Image (cartoon, rainbow, N blue to C red; front, side, top):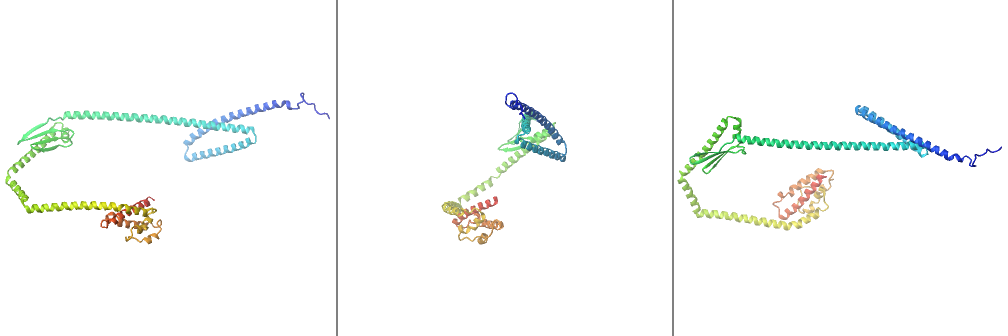
Length: 398
């Protein structure tokens, strides 16, 4: 049997291979373009549906909103499953799956860009609203300042008109050689009457103005003014009567001066007073000297004793450890609690015992309780008292 004659050119079927490859590429490109257009249309449709779903979800009750959210979650899960299938097919070389994945990626990027644009627009809206709010606040403050200034101006005008309306010329009245002056002080809340040597000053205040404003006829103000003037006259009469009475008693004054001179001339009385004064001064000087000596002695004892207390307190931060170590720093002192029993107590499990021991030590070491003790013990008690206090504060803070 004769073999079939090959096509001209002796190349078998290889002469049509480039044309077939070009056709396949064009076909793949057309399919890709259609897939991209379909994906874009689907993305627009999905966005529209999502917007409609969001609007609907805002209107439905909570239960229906939960149902919508569950449906959306299932839809996202389905899309994820489809994407995983496409990815598996694309890894196996399926051009349709690869084109679909590229379309999905383009949709994702487009969605991200859309969300970014929405976010940017929302930020711009919020920024514009904030600027408008700040502008409204500034305008409101400006209006308030203007209203305040206007109110202040009105008050000043009212006060000026009030002063002009109730202005009162100062008056002077002479009585028994005394002068009574009456003036109006607008800034004064109450009327004051001041008695000086030979002069009485009546300063009318807001109470007088209240009477004047209460009764426009001026009768109430006149009555008030006459009453205050009468009070001033009474003060003048009392001062004159007192001066007259003092002038009529020269004998009593002379007797009082004579008794004072006698007391001053009595040597025994003066000696007794002098001795008492000298003894008091000596006592005060001795107290000052004792105080200075005690302060110097305290400073001398403070350095070594407080250094010893610091060495003892080093490593003892817990209140339980400080209380259990007190016999070491206070030798010979009878403590008001059982140290051995406290050592055997769990500090965290039995905080009541620790607190009781602490309160007893406060009564023993408090500065007011050791005043009668020797100075050395007072210094030591002061240092230990501070250590116990700080340990208790740390225990309270936890």
